[in-house]
Image 1 (cartoon, one colour):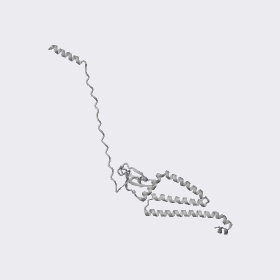
Image 2: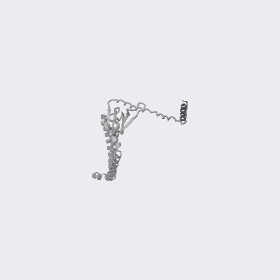
Image 3: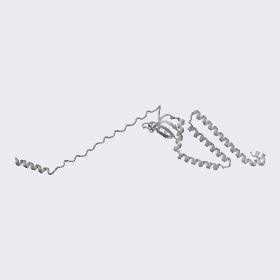
Image 4: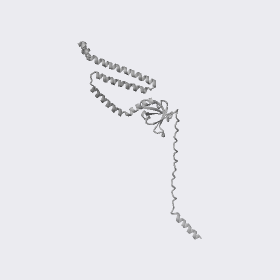
Length: 232
């Protein structure tokens, strides 16, 4: 490189400090763009071959894009003269913030990871009838799977009536923490639980008051008795 500089004219040597880093930056951006296109094409072909749903392909392409952009940005900053110490300090700071955000959003991230497992392992599919149980003995949320996204698995409640249709949104992480019962076909509709009969009301009768006693009747009766005795 030094030999090339000595053979070039003076006005060209003044521009080499701009041309060489600029060419390197353009080359880094071109390689990043080309790498992103190649990886997206590989992911698209793999998803079509293994029948991976779009809900999983879209975030995977986004993750690849952000990794490539971040790497290209670090290389471009290094070519522009930013020291490696500053880059490392910035990287460690972003990594710390990312770790804190990771633990703060652990419930959301666990649902995302479980969605990945549902899409790959396929314990059930859209249209299946499942029941999420705490234990195998107790009844749980039962219905037909109508949607699976990155956060929730939506069931059409099997116990709801035709007039009042209801949906159950179950977090994806809960699917791997509970017992999942998968039905072959449509499960029977649960019978309505009869209400207990109402207790008969007991009629309360008012107490009969005692007959009043008349004090005047006693002398009359005694007088009649004495009269009968005189007649005799």
